[in-house]
Amino acid sequence: MDWKEVCYHTTRDAIEPVAHLLNDQFHVEGILIEDVLDVMKEKRGTYGEVFDVPTDRFPQEGIFIKYYLPIDDEYNELSQAIEEKIKALHAFNIDLGTNVFYYNDVKEEDWAESWKKYYKPTRVSNTFTVVPTWENYEKQLANEKIIELDPGMAFGTGTHETTRLCLQFLEQYVRKEDTVIDVGCGSGILSIAAAKLDAKKIYAYDLDIVAVNSTLYNSELNKVNDRIVVKQNDLLKDIHQEVDVIVSNILADIIIKCVDDAYNNLKDTGLFITSGIIDRKKDLVIEALEKVGFEIIDTNEEGHWISIVAKK
Image (cartoon, rainbow, N blue to C red; front, side, top):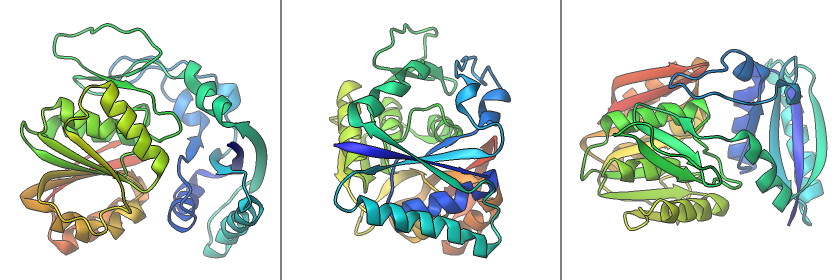
């Protein structure tokens, strides 16, 4: 199938409302934020990895929000509806900046391959290193845990702040024989990390079938598929489990929508690890968590992103 890459030039303030609209109303997956500040502010990461990303593909003012639409019978109607809804955000006093859409045709095989030259082995925590399947890498530390990954078209390479924050909290809080739910599993990176931390069983859910297939593939690649159950599902709707840990790296507004279901699917004293929260939404998420009975026991941040650990 061929796809249309939509590149929307806007402001940093528009990231959260635009991403929420794309995810929640139009169910668009695989949103990419391109911001030159993410590259210029730090060439070397917390754990020593070096990011070799050319800055000339980023806007020098504002940011690009990129998303992908299949070119099918519904493309024209869907594309127009999304553009109209985004431009209408002006009515809510959101600064949209340049507010321009660019459209490019992308063949699926080109999309899946073109970004690989920028994706290198990345140390993301004290013990986890994420290694693309096409890269040769040998352990640097005795306790190092390798996650081999080919995300394809699914979100979750380990290089984004929100994913790193989740991995660091999983490393800190998951215990041997724990049961875990991964809500919005994407590439499967968080499910695989939980398995490598000796979790007994992981239930991975995502609405996007591309993400489901990517998680299945990557869990087999890492030889942990015997402990990861992957299913297509809308968040935690109609899920009834009693697990030790729930982890979810999704948008703040979507986290708020599923706090009740998360609470009901945790054992007493179970943990809800959330990420994907832009800093200005932190208090809203904490309020929603505490309202249903969670206690906030830990927070961490990187850039403008927040991760929260809440206990039932």
